[in-house]
Length: 200
View 1 (cartoon, helix red, strand yellow):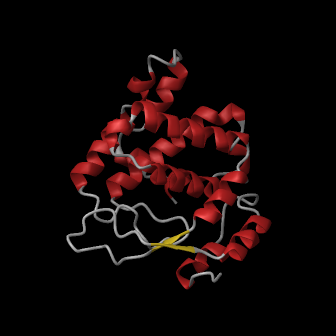
View 2 (cartoon, one colour; view 1 turned 45 degrees about the horizontal axis):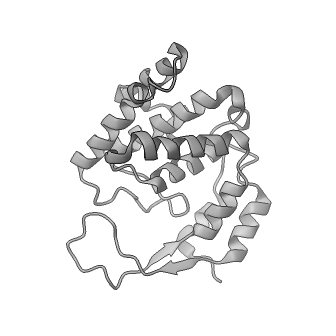
View 3 (cartoon, one colour; view 1 turned 90 degrees about the horizontal axis):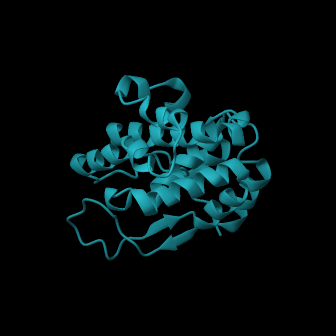
């Protein structure tokens, strides 16, 4: 029932969004404490990880997801379906998707998460994941200095990136709209991905 020092910055950091997460959600999150899970490192360890433990924020993540508005929830659900149905062999982890959406929820303007911007929000998730894959660093949402991509080899990151860049082709049988397709193919260069709006 303690809050770990390594996650203190999550409680106090400046956020562009003034609505998410709300102060009530943050206070509730602290009251849960944290979980310790007997799971070692996922990637790249040549050592025996059977005695390693991981800090889990699954109770906090549940509260955060429950605080999503309809568009945020729809984006989360849609990207999970993309992973399940279209990106199965890519190696894209559901936790990477969840982490990306959490970061974007607190970084994008509050008025971004509305039904009229649904496609743009999906595109923002795609762009941020690609940027992190190229940079080799996916910051943990609660412990920013913890890189979720640590040990994930460049070749594997590239495989995931290629799949994400080709989302438009994967979606083509399901979506018959040039406007939607163009959103997902507009930013293929690193320079275009490295923007203040979606990287900071």
